[in-house]
Length: 478
Picture 1 (cartoon, rainbow, N blue to C red):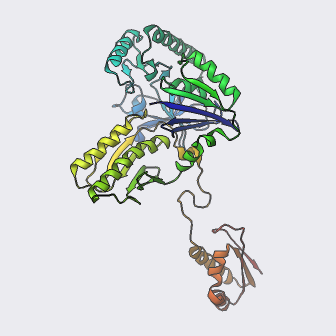
Picture 2: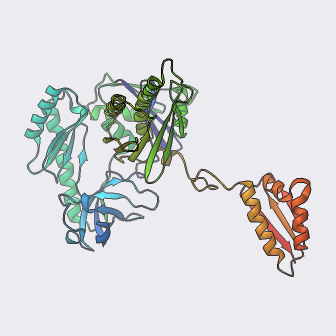
């Protein structure tokens, strides 16, 4: 599949869009090379061991301690964590997941060093070949090469970009990664914890190393310094010169010119329209993500079963694209439109599995539950797009709704009555949103007349257009 890589820079931030079949497939944004810590290797110190959670906190020298699960300790999954690590112990770890909310970074002890063609795993003893290489003969060739090139006692993974590469090219990169690992080990012996031993490359380099392959048609950038950097990295990483690099000089912003800004905006919406007229509703929570499929405007042309099947098949394709674009990971529950036919259900599952196969992030479709919902998981590999693009609403706190004007008016009235019970209070003034003021005053001023009569106080209600719906000011004269 031919793809375009679009790189833009604004306000000291780099934006990268991966375009496939004319639409945005993946999006990355990074402030600067120090803002990201995934891939970094630290010499940490065990700060606290929590046997009840089968985990430990690791001091990395960052704002928050890293979190180490017992399952992420190299080769140790059965024994209790308090038998494996002790408080104050120094340990070599790599960040696997960025800090999120109040959670610290997730760290692992299985170190991996990625190159363009290979991933060196110094503390493993295995080989692997990327599942993105479909040709069975090429996979067999690369697996044999991996067995020969693998350093004793270490692991080696063949990456997608290694397809068609010679033994010499792979050997040279293996030696570079070995040299890098030896430098990390030497640095670790010299310093005490906590200390940063290795910082992964910035976004532009990682995109060139991890994303750009022979099927990348063109790399379009909008800054001369990015263009020069891309040319330099392309030579270092031996990327095919057939992958063109273009410097965009148009007057319209690059992402706007290619329609990517519009794609990004749509990716923040809950509702996603399908070409047929059906739509998806995507709800993201901390625990899981639910996706509801609806026929919407699509009524079909023959019978209900065919309409439902066609909508579900189209939805399966779009769901795979949305999971990738939105960087959604964890537990995902999909409520396809009900299908009575087991054959139709299997067709939809097959379509979903096939659509997910092009996604580098691992996923697993578990099938239909007894309630008729499809259950699947996708590895939490990157920060969700919603966390990159959005911030919690200061008014609703992330719930997606605020108190109604009736509720706010009732709460305000309760405060008015409470103040009125104080003997030295002579008058009460309320400033609030006009909609709330309208409820407090009532039709023909019946509500405010009743409050004045029952409290015996002078009460004034004033609507303020500049106030938010849930903001009210109450003052009194004594």
